[in-house]
Amino acid sequence: MYWTMALKTFAVSLVGVFVPAFLYKLGYSFQSIILYFLIRELAELVMVLPTSAAMRWFGIKQTYTAGSLLTLAGLLMLYKLPTNPHLFGYTALVEGIAISLFFLPYHYMFSAAVTRKSGGRQVGLMDIIVCIVAAIGPLVGGLLASRYGLQAVLLIAIGFVVLALVPLFKGAKKERLQVFSYVKPFAMLKSRDSMSNMGFGVTEMVATIIWPLFIFWVVKSYATVGIIISLSMVLIVLLDWVAGKLTDNGGKSKLLRAGAVSSAVVHGVRILATGFGSITLINLASDITHTLFRVPWTREFYAHAGVKQRGTYIAAMELAVCVGRTGLWAVLYIGAAYVNQKNFMLGAFLLGAIGSLFVPSIAASKSRRRPVRA
Image 1 (tube, rainbow, N blue to C red):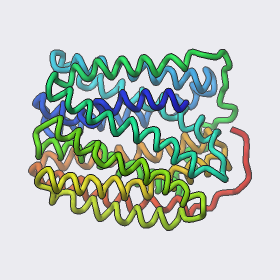
Image 2 (image 1 turned 90 degrees about the horizontal axis):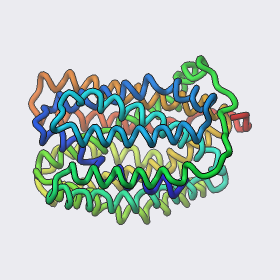
Image 3 (image 1 turned 120 degrees about the vertical axis):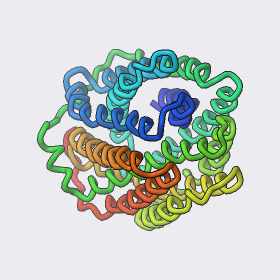
Image 4 (image 1 turned 120 degrees about the horizontal axis):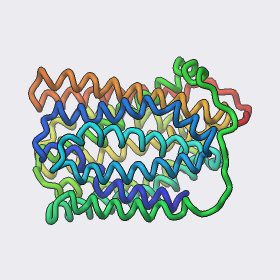
């Protein structure tokens, strides 16, 4: 799983942060770019329960593999977009379906592997692997995109996704989701966990989509965006491990609160960035504060999944994440029609700050500490 995730993360990191900039460079307005991500999120939201059903009937690994195959299709459609603008909505749709088919099985498999005693270190290890490849990806992708164009980088990314598929075809064992309900996930949306997931979804989208778009809007260079994003990742590799150990040693609640509040502050000052130096400093602060709450939050997420009906819980929390993100994109889509670009960015950052403040509520959730069937 680590090997597959590393390869796929590298493929996505080569182009992921540049997709909003790519659309902007193609001439799409801020509102059109937001529409792209709104369509993508709606597709992911609609696919949550069908994906869980696919895990039940076709197998967890098989659903995960289908998500990777659709990721390939999405990258190919994005590659064709400059000469085929009619693919705009279809590309977002395919990406949304691919995300759902990939990440629900991934969360399920990883939550089953994470133990309560060393969950923070295991999450930290996964984050370290992801951060290493994610640090290299934007730098390489940005430099190549500046010289050869993002379409060339998309082809390279497609190659790495193909490599990531190879381990998935090994082994004949078919593990299925044993227990699933179409009704229970909606009942779980009333929990503190769901509030936390909604907030997490909002702050993640602002940090990973709106912020890179803002950087490109200021610096006008793929290479510069890649350098800025990659610089802070070197420090985050070490911080991930430290945060994982602190989480396992009982410090998760403090880390969650400290990370969430400081992340909200960083969201609020992003709009003050005006050049390479200030953007780099704010991006570094953003990644540090994000890591402080992401590691204990992720550990807590998987721990809660382990003491409830895992498949149902993960589906419910994915619904919550998608609801939060869909709300964000809907508000921004409407707002983009009435405000200028700077005020649009300011509004997005403030929404990210609000989302951050909801993240620690997962630690206050009253979970039954009794394992149940998957």
